Length: 218
Ligand SMILES: N[C@@H](CCC(=O)N[C@@H](CS)C(=O)NCC(=O)O)C(=O)O
Image 1 (cartoon, rainbow, N blue to C red):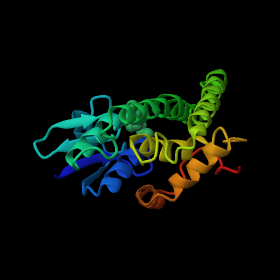
Image 2: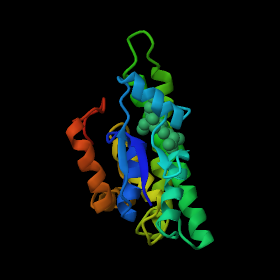
Image 3: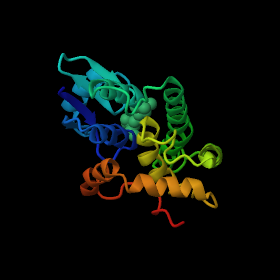
C-alpha cells in the first residue's frame, strides 16, 4: 500500500506520523513542507486545508490529515490491531492518551514555541505561562497514568499514544522539565530507544536544532 506523506522531518506531529510508518514497516513517498516555496505550499494546502502537517495522500488521491487519523489509516492498511489495539478497551485507552498528549502537550508546546518567535511588542508572556502550567499538569497526568506499571503509554504494547508521546514530549520537556516524575522519565527513555522513533530523529538531524529553548537539562 503506497502513499505520500507531507510533513517536515523536524515537525513534532510529522515525526508522530513518521514514527508510526516506520513502526509498521510502511514505505512512503515523503513531500517535505517548505513554507518558502509558494507553489509547493499551494499544492500542500489543497491536500491539507488548514495547512497543518502531517497529511497523507493514498494511491487513489484521497487526502487524510490530523496525525491520529493518518495513523489510523496506516494501521488499518498494515493489517490492523497494532497501533490501534484490536481490543476495544485497549483501543479506547490508546486514543485517550493520544488525545491528552496532542491537546495538553503538543498544543501548549506549539503555542509556547510560536510565542517565542513573535516580534518584540507582540509577545504574550501571560498566555505562555498559562500554557506552561498546562504542560506541568500533563506531566502529572502522565505520571499518574503510568503508575499502574504499564510499559508503554496505553499498556503493554507500543501504540498510537506512544507515536504521539515520543516527539511531543521530547520537544515539550525542553520548555517545562519533567522534574521529579520517575515514571514519565522512564517511559520517555524507552521512547528514545525505540528504533522507529530513532529513525524519525535521524531524519530530522540534518535540519539542526530549531527549538527556541535549550536541550533538556534534567
Ligand atoms: N492537530 C494537528 C496538529 C498538527 C500541527 O500543529 N502541525 C504543525 C507542525 S508540528 C504545523 O503544521 N504547523 C504549521 C503551521 O501551523 O503553519 C495534527 O494532529 O495533525
